[in-house]
Figure 1 (cartoon, rainbow, N blue to C red):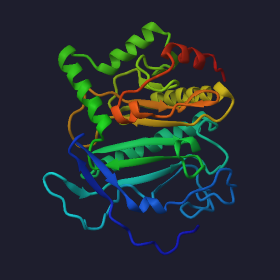
Figure 2: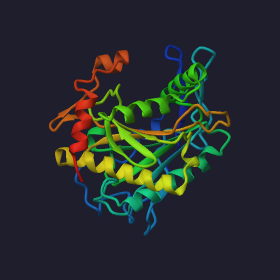
Figure 3: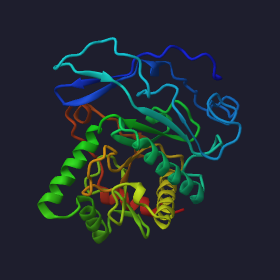
Length: 330
């Protein structure tokens, strides 16, 4: 598939859920996004240097998604809302970040230096996208693996620049703000202090970042990476911190792949301060991994309790899984 005449854009909209009090994005254009079959060759890949979106040569490449959930300039709304069923234009920006021109690699197989360069790209995109007055939150993430639902296998991540603060982030902001008001301390700093002190859930610790399976993990091999110093966003990172984050990310990713001897699927999400111009000194930069595997040949699917009630059931213990990851050596 090559770039040709662009189809007429359909409306991307935000619909208000009055029960959960949160926005739902409706994006009909995403139904037509390309699907790359499993095992597609480099010649068939849409994201390799010969593909429809990318230059003939690149190291790390960023471009706006052709099939976005949010649109920079959405068409006018054709459906009218009211005070009960509120509706807004789905104005935002969705970007794709190609980690490498090499089709058969993953972020795990990239060098620490390449991951360091990617962190610089994340930092740049967070800064630029967050500078738009209609962007309230810049969400950097990666979905890896067919079991996660990835439709293109070339190593890449995504960035959603939201016109609102997403629900999970709002809950974290609320809990950390209350904790700061009650104790005068950062909630995430206290969690990290406990994890470092108890050691049994630590997976890897660098000078500036620590990786651990949280005490309250919802996924069996869930790993969080916290900045050891109180940082609200990656804009506050110095060079040594970025280098250390690259090292810790590499350690965690390799441990995942070594665990069962195959390329480990996961969702990786980056949580940091919103970009709406307000003060968030009580918040704390961190990365979270949600891998779906619960053993070598078993996947944790979300059932009615998780999806319908919002209450996760973890069939394992955080201490046990952290020990397995620690032993999964490079």
